[in-house]
Image (tube, rainbow, N blue to C red; front, side, top):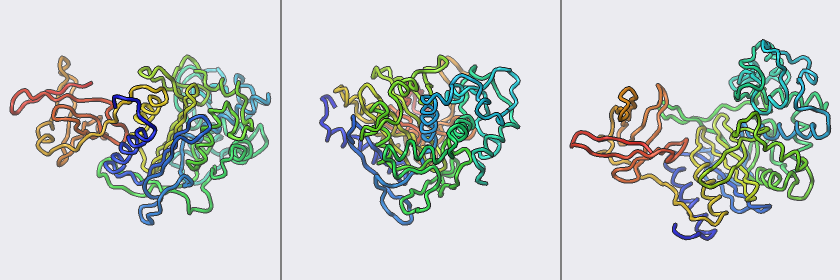
Length: 439
């Protein structure tokens, strides 16, 4: 668009983009909410809670939100810091003396290091990990880490760790004297008004969305497995888009709920958004993403758990937030594109058109398939593989990204993970030879 769109034009453009990719990628269900200040700017659900029952999703449908759970765990621990029951910078063994993984470095693990993913711990605990369906407790999951050894000296390296945030949740239990799920529910969820959010699978399954997974090799789609994680503080929450909108508005309201109840002090919340250890992409729990073209930084967290992909993002200076979730794993395509344009719309900037690739023709696919060398770097080869009229650029041995077509001479990445993150320009040199260049 060459002009500042109206709200209706903006929403129509977003809907066209969403609907195209839901259809093109066979995404069973998708939901989104956009918040502006303390108001819902727009929300909508697409698809079905289950492909067999065909019941449509709503703003009250329950989704697994994966690692977005970590934000609630980290906010809970910071409320205990506010109460001076915890110190971010002392050895956590003061609070959980039975936690003693092998530490050859001599430097203690602190809460700051745990929340910032710099504890040096393994990614997954031996018990209660992402692949363990035995239903262990948080304590059993944490104590299983005593058989592991730190990879790095605490504080020295960033290493994402579900195990580390599980330890944080265990400290919430031990210091508060209340089970983790009850503390989160009583001190965060219910005061915010999040009555449709749960730390374990709800007993009433009527509103729960079914997650789906897809084989990367065959493309076969199947229902995702579902069990409660032992490392539940790192990723076991169920929530609705209605509830996530309340959480967004609490973050935008400096830690106060839409009804004005203080959940966390403004000063504490601000401290959680300060980069840690010189890493400009990680604060105390929040992921930070700088968008130089828009001259802004957003904060939030993503989630990925069997059959679901989710994101929650706030830009507090502009007073906007976004939550979205899909019922198909590895479906990250919507985040950057919609966020970028929502920020533009809010800033009254020129609105970039959404990239909606067209299907490739069979003739184009046949022409472009093959093995290519990077110009000036003949050792760097990549392969573009054709499957009927579809093209894939291969990355490694087992991963490939689908390509779409913008024009006869321009291809773009058009995959479940992202769209148009890179562009391939096609130059026909002879009837049988072409050259490709990346942007």
